[in-house]
Image 1 (spheres, protein in one colour):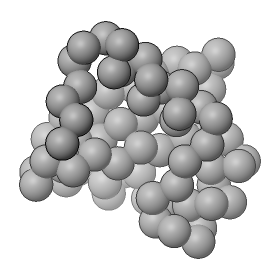
Image 2 (cartoon, helix red, strand yellow):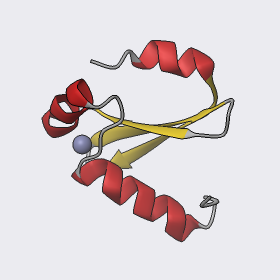
Image 3 (cartoon, protein in one colour):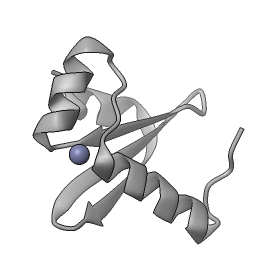
Length: 74
Ligand SMILES: [Zn+2]
């Protein structure tokens, strides 16, 4: 399980999206990478295998952010 408190302390910026009641967090790290965290069961299960996981909620959050125009894709 990813320790979000630890990641949060290393992130330069944190954004929280409310995706239909499920909080999705995006941490922007000092090296410019982004790490998405979701509290749903599907994400927790995937995050246990690969540190960085994705789920329906994170996918929606990323799409919203892109539509926002506030994300810069590298
Ligand atoms: Zn999720």
